[in-house]
Image 1 (cartoon, rainbow, N blue to C red):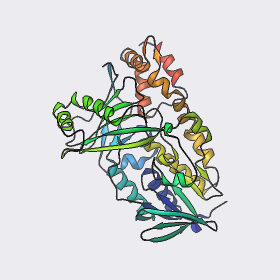
Image 2 (image 1 turned 60 degrees about the vertical axis):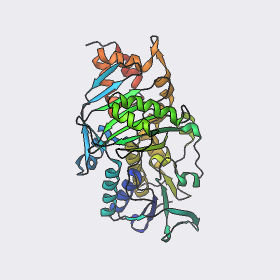
Image 3 (image 1 turned 90 degrees about the vertical axis):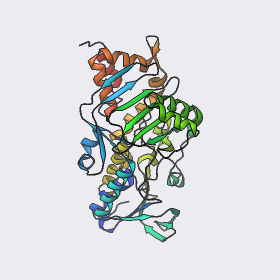
Image 4 (image 1 turned 45 degrees about the horizontal axis):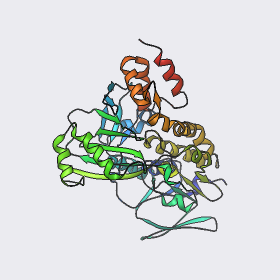
Length: 392
C-alpha cells in the first residue's frame, strides 16, 4: 500500500516525543497531519534525560531554546556504597518533560500539523479509512499511528499485547528548588532490577526509582527512595515521610509504567500493519531500553524511521526499526537479569563493575559511554573484558 504525501492524511494519537516528531517530519513533507493529545504539555513521569547520542543525532534538541540542564558530571553508586565519578565525553541534557513537549509540539504545529487537545474516544476502520472520534467531532485519516505511551490504548486496539512481565514501574518526586550543582546521581539497588536517580533540571530536581513491575510494592519503593533522598536532604525526606510520601507544596509525586520487553516479546513484536493502515511508535511500541528504561531517544528515532517508511518505502518500518535499534534492545533484554542479579568474583556484578571502574580507565570509559548512550549492548561484554585487563 503506497501513499502520495500530498494526498495522505495521517492521524497521530499522542503528542509526546514520538508523535510530535513524526507530525513534524510528515508535515514538512507535505502530508496533512492530525495530532491528538488529551492534555496540554505536562510534567510526564520521567527522569527527562536526553543522552549525548540523542543530542548528536537530533540537533534541534541541542540547539533548542527550551530550558534544559546540561550535565557534565555523574556519580554512580552501588547498593553497598561504592562509588565512581564519571565525566561524559559529551555533555547530555536533562529536560523538564513539560518544556520538551512544548518544544516538540511547537515544531509540529509550525511545520503544519493540526494539534487537537482532545481525548480520542473511539477509532474505527471503515472502507479502508480511519474514523477518529473526539468530543469535538469525527475526523477521517488514511493512516493511524499510536504514540500514546506505555499504557497505549491504540496498541490494544491494534491487537498488540504486552504481558505484565514486559513492564517496569517507576515512582518519584519532582522537588523545588533546583540544586546548585548540576550533577546526576544514580544508585543501583540490592536484590532488585533497577536503580535510584537524582536528575537536576533548570527549576527543580527529579528523584526517582525504577524496578521490574511487581518486584516490590509501591510502599517499599517509596521507603527505599526516601532513604536515598535523606542521604542528601534529610529535611525533605522527613517532610515527605510525615505526609505518607504524598505530594507537598515543595514536591509533586509521580508514578508510571515503563516498557521493558523481554526477548520473546521482541521476537514476536509487530509494530505496524500496512494493510490495516496502522503503526506504533515510541513507548506505545515498547521501544525503551530494558536495562535503563531510557525511551526518549527511541521515541524520536522510531518516529524518524516511520516517517521514512510512510514517505518512501511503505512496509519497511519493521525492517528499519529492527535494523537500527531492535537488535540492541533485544540484547539488552537478554542481559538485563544478569546485569542486575549476576555475580562476578564473589560479588554482585554491578559492585564489581564499579570497583573495577575506580581502578581501570577502560572500564570507567565503557560505563561512561553506556550511560551516555554511546556504547551498545551487542559488544558490551567484549569491551568490558578487554578493558578489565588493560590497567592504565
